[in-house]
Length: 436
Figure (cartoon, rainbow, N blue to C red):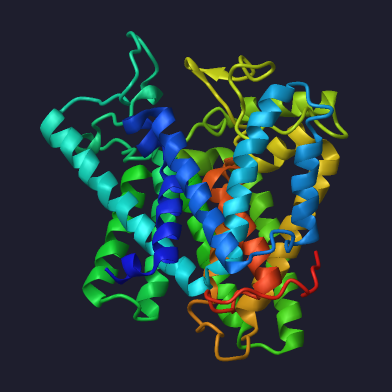
């Protein structure tokens, strides 16, 4: 495997595997084992940064402001201990992504994601097949000793492959596995278009990704996939238009997007029934109401950054409990930011998203120049990734943790300081300007 001979690609692949399927480690070798793996990953990226002279200060101003606000929130946090833990995990994830953005090219990002997703999808299908065909019973994570009865959500796999139920794979969650499968559809399609993989392997993994999407049946991910398909069509069309045509297309797309949202809200109940979901968005309306209630109590600067909610502190210990499961996220990244960092944080977060989106979209549409410029298909990757992340953020808060945060930070930094075109073996001089 050539990716094994490229140490940075192998490290990036291992990193994305851990970020996308962290519960695979936590369910097998415990949280302590996962923590050790995370520490090793951080140290290895630290070595990469030191050897290549990466200047960690070279990040977009909006990203620096958001990270700075998160750190400062420990001063007014309602739960300073939990904020300290949240800052540790958020800071480590952002640090890794920043180093990656400076040292891993877009082509290498594509390869590393491809490797990680092959392992996640392949192992997940094999795992579910083994559980359903051999064990023929649900499987709990290792290192736990829960007593019956406990919520079904606690199972690692519920052995539903042959029963028509939603599979959970090695991530232990159908929605997380579906998200990985959608990324697989994007990555493997681009690899096929650019002939970076053999036809048999490319089509095989694309089929496996589509099969995984069908077996997980995540409505949120399916909507994100539809949005990515629309974004693909808009970008391809925009590449053929003049500057004025692109401006008109942008306006039409914005109006159409607003119209789709309005129609979706108006006809919410029949649409949810069509995809087999309850009219309260599987409990999300109650969660959103609880989060908005908290945000209204501290509207300016919020309750303090915590990232993934800490279940051992108020108000998260019993804020949302549904069917015996304590929920630890707002199921909407924007509401999570509003509650944790207030309107100030939400404004900074919005600026980060808008500026990153503008750079990524412009870069994907307008062909960059030079020998290092990626091909037309590869240039689609950042825009499609960001589209999926943003649509997914409306019903999940994964944009703020693990793989979602890492990909967002990578795109924000790489689109600014490297234009997503510089070869991975080169690092820009520290004198280059930094802009938002």
